[in-house]
Length: 429
Image 1 (cartoon, rainbow, N blue to C red):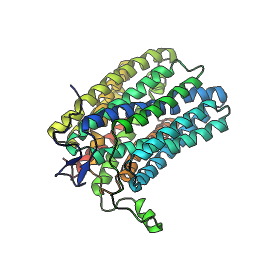
Image 2: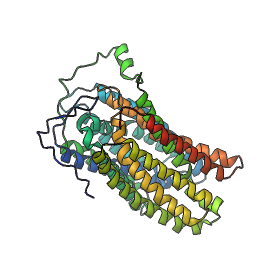
Image 3: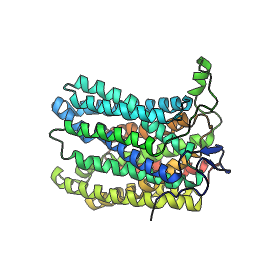
């Protein structure tokens, strides 16, 4: 199924969405060019961030601190989650306040691309753990301006009835970016420095390409917030009287928390629960990764356009959530290597469908036109915080001697609660 975004029939300058509570969507370019822009920038920033936070970083840490690599990696993982959570919220709010001839989001996409490129280069040349941590902190705080601003482009410039397809393109590009990064990174594990330079170039080109492909209108004509203490406090305030907004947050948070409790421990489940050796686990993990990649792309390709066609967001997300539940149930009742491969395929299909539709849903529960970036930054913490909590929860359960079976049960309960919480949202079908 093609996921190309069609050009709007009317002039792309002003696109009305009469059923939206957000008001009028203005875009200087048509949705097809925006789709290409989302594809390029999504692939680029996830490629770069995968390099900064996954295999090449692990390889770099192993070189700099071979005796303490597990502990140091844990510090980096925790730092990355916390810093990204805070930075996405901050940069989203700052972009809401920005008034420039290039629009609200464009300056911060450029800032994120340039600072991310510099940060990755500094990580590459770091020759001590202290230097590496400093470069990593700077990278996380400044680079996050890019994904925060790009996400806010969705409600700014994409009509509601095309957001499922647009988020499918963006989500598919992110999946591809992560997969390509892992494939390329596998060739640099003994000497990871070169990989950081490649990622530095990719994020710079990708960010600048987005603003060239899909330039925005000037935002100078938009009302300005008075930047005194009261105005700043108001800009960073959490939304009030926005129950749908918080139900959407809860649904995303719980669904990802439940999935990550199992997904992030695949190797240990294979060795400690199923009983394979490390050597026996390696081909299983490879097959599981391949199955997951195929089904994620399939889920993304189908769910976004279908959601737009049937004009429904909640039911596709609920179906995707139930796939998470089925996937988690498999190793509980059938503890074999085959079940873990099927787990990856089924959960990948659910994750692809979820990624394709959830972004569209999030843009449709935003309580204010003036604070889209900040509010999406808040919703983005439902992506990052589960990645911090899930390993702690699973490690705690296993560490107390209960094994992995309670992990599967608790994960399943969390997923089911998250799935049904989606139906508490009333303003979106």
